Image (tube, rainbow, N blue to C red; front, side, top):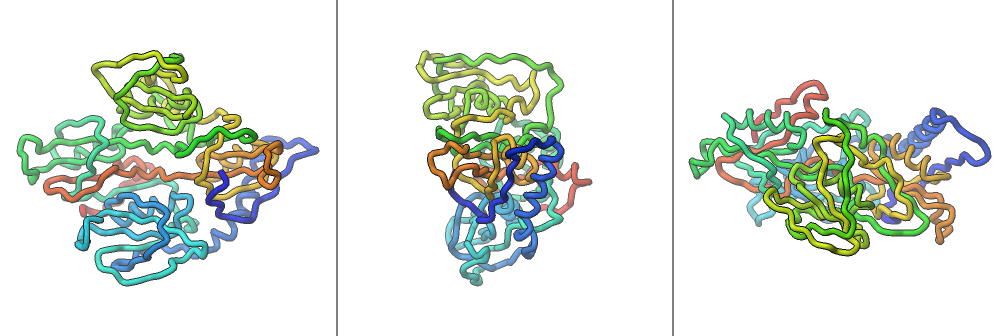
Length: 407
């Protein structure tokens, strides 16, 4: 909770002694955010990429990206990243092709700039006022495989049909298609649809007295199924052992149920209450069963309830969403903290510190938090006869697909 604070200019917001309408409270929250963002928005917006230029050192995270544009989007969404260096596929010194290094300095500028063949560097677009909230990843990558994260496959005529299928399937985030150059003929024209969790879930969840945490309401309102709402049952002191494919920190078993429901591979789950860990599981043929104290288990209900279900309208008392702070503000209560997070286009979840917290200097602080939500393939490798890319749903919403060609 108390890490990675980017600003030292908290906004004082107190409603003590008088009542405010919801409209007035939201207006004051927006004014507060404008004042907070004023300094950062006045900084220079640098969109251009610098080819064969390295920003050495200052790394805060390393991910895999198919190109520098994807790396730049990830840097823009990262709560701490200000600039980056991407290792292009033609890099030959070692096997770090497709590595994307996200970087930060207190000055906001690279500590060092050097020439280096095979890399591309650039800056976060956080300060770009006209930056679109939609993420359009329209480039298709030839002889590149997004290895892993498959949830289904089918045969299509070409990679365009594969990408179209991915775009129409709301679960699909990226794909790989095996074309006529793939070495094994029986697998040619096979389209692999892939999914990796992009819902902005807190990477670290702890028990902590005197705080409350929750989510921006805007991330809980997108999309729903046409089916009826249905009641689901979570079994207490029951474990479905084995078959784990992902472990996610979770503030409650209900949130674990939600995470399983929105993941197309999840067929059941088990939640460990003491550790606050949600184990997503996949097995279509059988479901092992065992009694186990402190574990709660269940099955998804993705076909009969709102797609975003109970994603985050609950405020979790005495739960800390640790780290990943974009900035903080001083507020009077967790409700105003939640409203501030919802009004902030970058905030995804928050932690609020009550007046009763044992450290006086940290009381009444509302921490606004953010994680990367651009799809991140678990592995990106060069492979003959494979074409990979991303869904185009964001491109369609922004008024059409930008044709950037095949790389």
